[in-house]
Image (cartoon, rainbow, N blue to C red; front, side):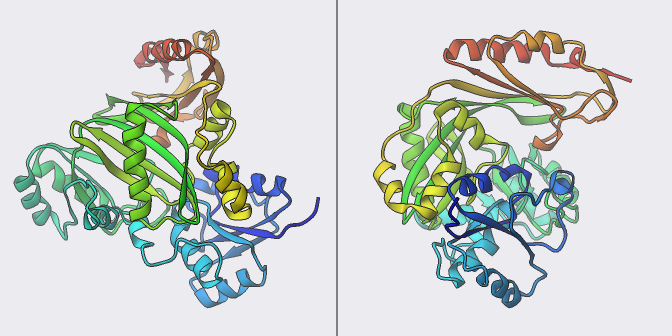
Length: 415
């Protein structure tokens, strides 16, 4: 196949492993830039360079990294994951390629700055505080009242999120977060405290090209309280593109993209639909994690993957097709099983019942018999994911309910 040029992906790891093959299929080669000298611990076991013709490790010398990337004469530089957003902004801007620029890079990564950016342009934004210490956090919580959320300013996957009903609990959360290594093997330096947003959480995924935004997929999440965690995400369910809730979400989401100056590439937004309207939880200037783009392709035939390829390599086709809404060929849900145990897993006694579900597509068994099983406390500690797919929505919903019925203490035999 003809070589159309090189696409550089910054911090391509397993959660975004499907991005490079989309470009390769269209005749491009892919190179990888690693923004940190060391691979984050969470990605070491699944790291692969098979799809990349070059691997450039950024050691902190921006001029040298820029020189190495420029020597490839790339057609695009794209963030392959959350930690790669800022370096991708710098490289693409300096090389004069399609870019979101660096002016608002911090707002696209730092969770406090992100929300303040929305407030500055008049969009609905949660009340929040960036405390310098526990005393300031305690005073803010006392003044704000109610439940608040304390979390790291630069982490992901629900790691380090604490729901706090008292100022004392907030201070304890701060102490547990600051100084701890996060999911990206970085030491947490700050926390952000925010009012707890009550409502259903949705995900809106997009791709932008020259400031034009495409909504690629919308998801409804479900939540349960488990292992002393208030809002554990236990499933995502894809939604039709159009509907009353979707129209409200999309209107707000497109304003968020503009506020963050996302001109090119994917955007991943988590939005709470509160009694008085939508409010952003956070946004990532990269494709959704958790294999969500792959799920979207199973349900709709397209996703952030294909649209990102168009945004950077065929803007004309992007604009021609952009306003055609996606349609659901299948209903789809990804359901997480939630372990209440810490111990060595002996077996899953009710796994056979899962295999009998009518909409079952795939069982992803992350913890196998003989492995250590952890209590589920965030997205990184799911022991098993079940993928459901069917042309009839009620079948998926029925099987989702069956999984919730099966899960619990009896689902795991632990020794």
